[in-house]
Structures are given as structure tokens and as C-alpha cells.
Image (tube, rainbow over all chains, first blue to last red; front, side):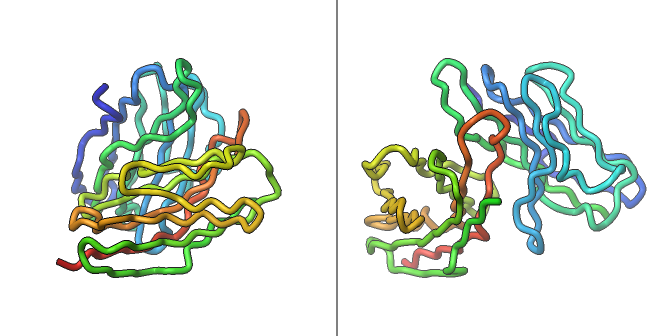
Length: 116
Length: 116
């Protein structure tokens, strides 16, 4: 398996622009997580899905952030409008292999977002 | 709520030496998982090792091993024969068992530098 795939790997945008981050989880995994990492706040869980359904979005900072999972192999995290304080590394992770019943989270390479 | 504490913000060790990173956690749960993740300068989050709390035997993965002390709520990571490629941030993480408990609680990390 290719692991969790995220795109783009780097994104530079201007304040006010819409940003869309994409994630393809590991095939067969039931859970998908979106994290944000900054120096000040460390790793924060933003939202996670089970079988494409959002389970907990209490970590989503505000209405400017939205996440969707239209099918088992694709999820997006959208920021509209973006602000400089959104600059961070955004990770996607997936877990729960039904075949092995293993709940370990595997992370994608991250998207480094810089909002100017 | 669970908390994870990594009391060593930074450590350094000579190549080929052994180093131990400490982690303590606080929980009232009896069944849970513990993890160590490595984050090298590339920012990728890489699973190093995992431990199920119901297992008394300490997990081992090649040069990496843990000392899991359930009563003391301690979960240290030992790296033997350290290599330059081990230079990274190391995060300890906790996860409860069961549906609805899939979130990871991370410590603040230990920055490990291997000196040539």
C-alpha cells in the first residue's frame, strides 16, 4: 500500500484566498483524521471521520474551516477565507484495519501551508 | 481526560550510544494503547512502536524497545546503537480502547539529536 497520500505537499497563498487540502487514506481503513501542527500549539486534532461520517469536529477552529469525506478514499479540508494564523503543517491520518483489527493511526506526509 | 507528559524537551547523545526518552501519562482507563511516533526534519510522522496496555511484555522493534510500567503510568522509549537517522522529534501518544475513543492524545515531544 502507498500509505496515506496528501496533496499538495506545500501551499503558499495570500490572505483571503480559499485553500483546499486533500487526503487519500490507506485502503481498508475506516477512520480518517485531520491534524494541525504549529510550534505554539503542537499537534491538534481538528476532525475525524468513521466510515465517511464526521464523528468529532470539536477541534475545528471556526467556521472558516470545513472538512468533507465524500467517499472512503478521499477527504478534503477547506479553509475559506484563509488567514496568516492558519499557517501550519496539516496532517491527515487513517486507522482501523478491519482485517487485522488494528487501530494504529498512520500519518500522511503533511501539507505545509503558508498564508501571507 | 487523559494527559501525556514528556519531561525532556531536548536530548542529545553520541552516535552508537543508547538513549532513553521518558513519557508518563494519566488515565483512569485500564485498557488503552500507547505509541511512540518519530518526526524527522522532513516532518513526516512515523510510527516507531506501539504497546497494548493488556500486554505485560514490553514491545520491541529492532533497536527500539519500551519499558512499560502500567502501575506507574510510565512508557519510556529506549533506542539502542543510536544512528544519525534517529535525529528527530519523538512524540508519545495515548489512545483509549473502544468506539468513540479513537483520538490520540500526544505529549509535547522530545527533540533528540544524535551527534556524530
